Structures are given as structure tokens and as C-alpha cells.
Length: 54
Image (cartoon, rainbow, N blue to C red; front, side):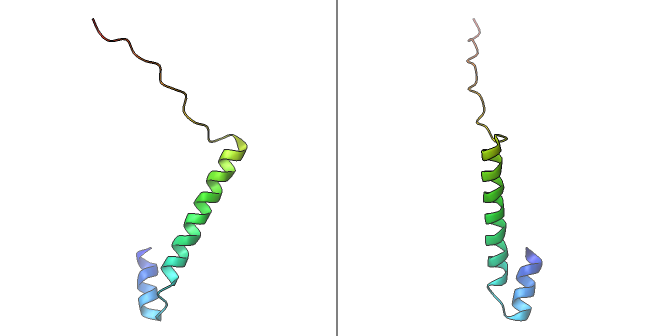
């Protein structure tokens, strides 16, 4: 990402790194939706309570 900020400063395109970050965020959100729909992303089972030591 630092390289994109440098490139944006050199080419006078301040929107470039923010567009890349937005695309990355949308890609991650899409991946999470896909994992959720296929059942690969399930909530963790509730932890069983451990008995207190006597």
C-alpha cells in the first residue's frame, strides 16, 4: 500500500490508494459472504463450562 501512496503522490492521483483499499475491502466482504453461504464460516460452538477447582 505504501507504494500506491508514493505512486499517487508522484502522479498527482490522490484517489488511487483509496480506490485500491475500497476494492480490497469489497473483495474481503465478498469472500466472507461466499464463505457464509457455503457453510464454511460457522459460529464457534459454545464453550463448555469448566468446573471450579475444589
